[in-house]
Length: 63
Image (cartoon, rainbow, N blue to C red; front, side, top):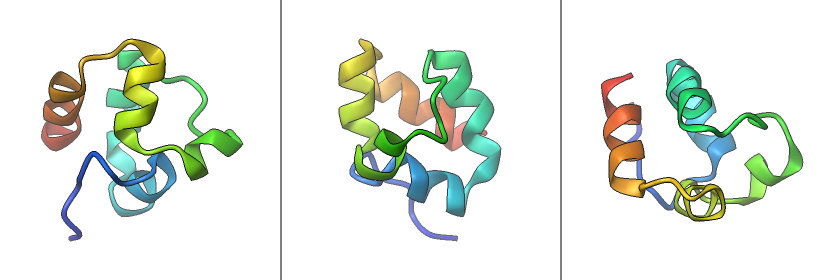
């Protein structure tokens, strides 16, 4: 499996680890299929949504 990094887009993350979707939804990222998900990095999306990136990455890792 590819390494998951905060610089990946949400779309890339969901392609390599689709089971991470519930962690994103629980964190408040509800537009997983929108165009921004294909161009925004996980870190950028976390910043826009006011989400702690370290906590989010931990949740993604544990998914």
